[in-house]
Amino acid sequence: MADIADIAEKIRAKLVGSDLQKGSVLVCVHGLGELLIDASTCEVSLDRQDGNPDATVTMDIDTLQGLREGTVSPTFAVMMGRISIRGDLDLVGKLAKLMKGL
Image 1: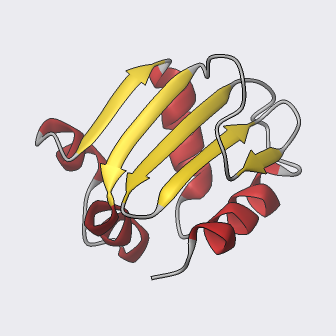
Image 2: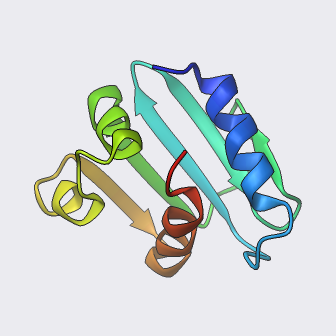
Image 3: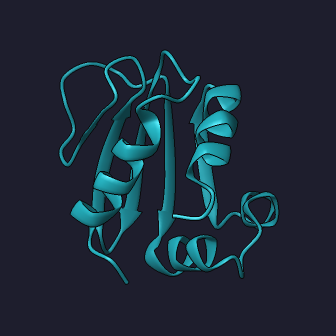
């Protein structure tokens, strides 16, 4: 499993030049840490900033690994409660498509 800094760099690289122009998502991975993804600035921070993100996504490290390997369906994981999403679902969906194959 890659560490949180490696994942942050990969997300940052995909944000640059993407059509995702605004919004922020806090991704909390139990056992790994947090990432604050800000599409408007193409920044990915390893710590929570002041303010409220547009959405929060929470999962455990095993679910993240399965998503990265393609062995866990994001839709199924949400339906089974392995991923919790609060806030802007449209933004989370766009970010999920962008992050495919990390």
